[in-house]
Length: 401
Image 1: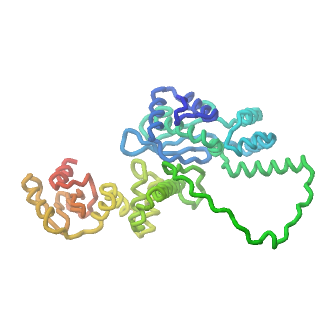
Image 2 (image 1 turned 30 degrees about the vertical axis):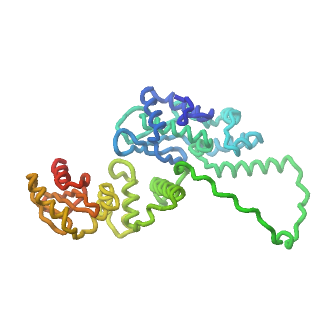
């Protein structure tokens, strides 16, 4: 599978990652399917944190699966031996600063008992899909896509092993300075510069032009706080991914499609974008936070999310704002339903209801009929199904559901 086509490793450390994956699997068919998923863009934004890699992978079902790869982090003693090995050779330092992982550094670290690259059995996959494969095709897709991240930045591997790039470089700089101080005599004092000379007016060069806009939004990667009282890491990942997508749209089109939304509408949009099947613990925390910020209950937010998923901003307006439609489609709806031998519905503003059956149609400003249902005899209406320009089609689909 490591054929260097953009989703497998093209660096030697990326290929080592792929070999660990392929040694882990007993089913080449699942690996092949995961390779297709990675090549086809089915892998979402990847969140990298010490000891784990998380993403959502789109499979054959409408909702993506939460997929995670875990890897053992190194101990403090392991890091001390690795950093001492790296600082002992200037070539190793230069390579790391150039986003390169020298083979000789990895070999030297292994000689002192520090294994950076995953060995067979080190990668522990998990996925919310029903496939019990080890790994399933979604986890395989995440591994192949991770190899692409490793090709671009070997510090991703070091982050999974437990240290951020900034922590490593700062530690290496301190070790290098201490090593240089021991090896070299102190330099002579640097001559000072008069303040009047340093602050004299001078002409600065023009600023460089803006960088080109990337073809797609960037992927979120890095460690998010997991301490007590801190925001949920997966909620932060959702917000970072959404901010990157909005910024990319603003750079490419000059317009922010989210700007016209009210804070409540934007909260509903964010909650509706949360992937996964059902309300997970992370999703419930996100719903509770968003609802509390707008003096709403999580049930109110869940109902609004259902309306957003049914028809976007128009669907949310249909849920929350009754209105009086002009003569036309609304007046023709009841005869059309009667001619189709469907239940008679009572009109009220833009709604046609049968409370005893628990069925309702609402006319939106886009002249589509939005189906709703409730427990018979109650007034607890929830959006359900797909809106239709034909009231007969919308009601028939609701009754057949």
